[in-house]
Image 1 (cartoon, rainbow, N blue to C red):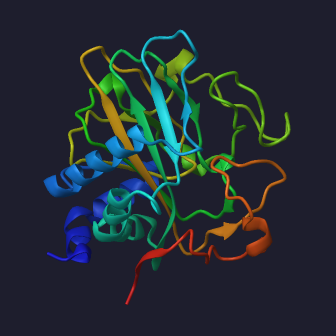
Image 2: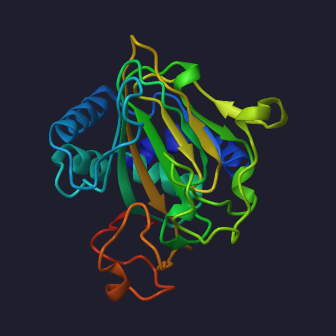
Image 3: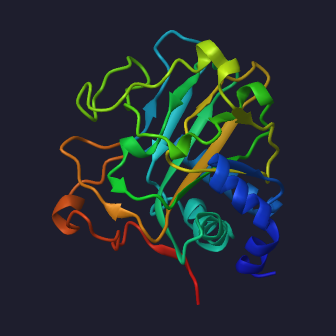
Length: 276
């Protein structure tokens, strides 16, 4: 099957409705063994040679290591080949119900065995330089992930307001000014009050979510490594929204090249799929 046939087979109308309703779904066995191996190779090469954007996201002295890196598809051959040749762009377009799927950026997240650091609850889009509602992020683990270590979501939260983005290490408001957006509720302190979704995953499964869906993740056990490649897509209605602060990730010089309100037509953001 070609990529569009695989996208059609891998995403049912019921899953499209679930994505629209809940803001997060898990697509089982979407990727084949060759695609997962390609991502493993890309992640391992990225770990061996991190970019200047890489950061360790757990506090010094805490168990394990949580390594992140961003925007490496242009220099990492395996990342680039996966993004361009796998069905992920076509799948994103179907889930977004968009005529196009444009790459936004890639994001590597690796928690080494014994890393106890939680990824705190947050939305992604407030950290970004974009506006619009047609978005899709894919969280692709190349190692088996237990339920308590997986990505979790508050179902339906993508339909709610933007909430204050804060730094993961010290909870500082470095993006929107303090008080401009409402703060997140204490989800972890009252989990029973929220419709929380999450799935144990195996290599080949792909977790897909809207950029405004509240999500978080646990630490990993001492016998389990969690290597994840995340890739983010923009649909038809996404527009450039330059900020007065450094976004995460940053796109240096983009403000001068792409006016506010523009479609994200730029070599950094290629169209991966377009309806014929």
